[in-house]
Length: 173
Image (cartoon, rainbow, N blue to C red; front, side, top):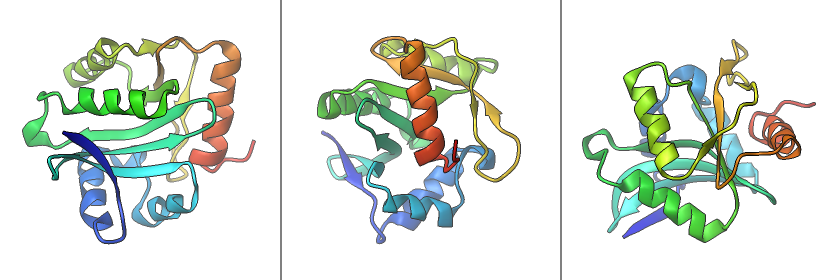
């Protein structure tokens, strides 16, 4: 059975190493900055487990009106076995909030597969121009915003934009 176990000091290094392996440098924080996020009440860094065995990781933020999935990665050797889908189903039932995430435009085969995965889960691709702020004072990363269960209206997108800029990315508006 899928479960989300909060990362602790004890297993932070091993789970963070998998985050490094799964995401390029420009799409993640360095270790010290990731640890600082634990001071924010909305932050959740979890190991995804099945019967006590680690199958992946997820980083998400719970706000009053939405849940923002910052990172999700299933262990390479067990991808396409339903763990990602089950994790999103767990989030949907546990939090009963709209879910928002960022994804690269579908240019490579892997990116196309990722977008199809999200669409199969009911996520909608929003048409707003969006760039993810840099984690390292370099170039912002152009991404798409996907939402479940519905597209975001302009005010919802603006709230997502403002909230994540301030709390997730630490940018004062």
